[in-house]
Length: 106
Image (cartoon, rainbow, N blue to C red; front, side, top):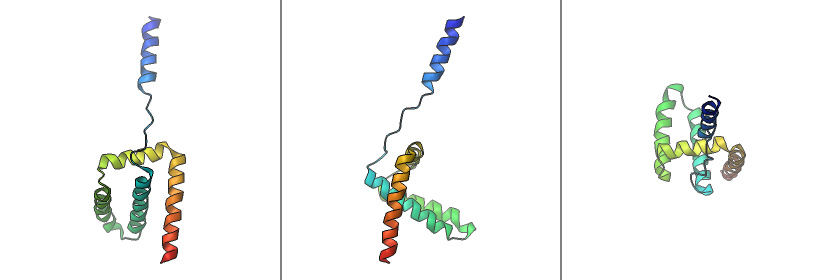
């Protein structure tokens, strides 16, 4: 009786292990996508509450089509960032630096 329970526990432990998700695209592409996502969120925050959802949907479709991505790839990208906080922090810092440079040029 002990062995089936032990085997079941081993099965559950090893079957629930998640494999690390690798980067869904090249770093440069991910930086561009992240930059555009941040700019979209910034723009949407300036809109009236009733306009936000429709504008966000349209801009998200444009974002995906600009990079040839689909919803699944965007979801994988977000999952990659959430599973790799050090990479996410580094990429966000790079994007913020780029946006600050662009603001200074205006």
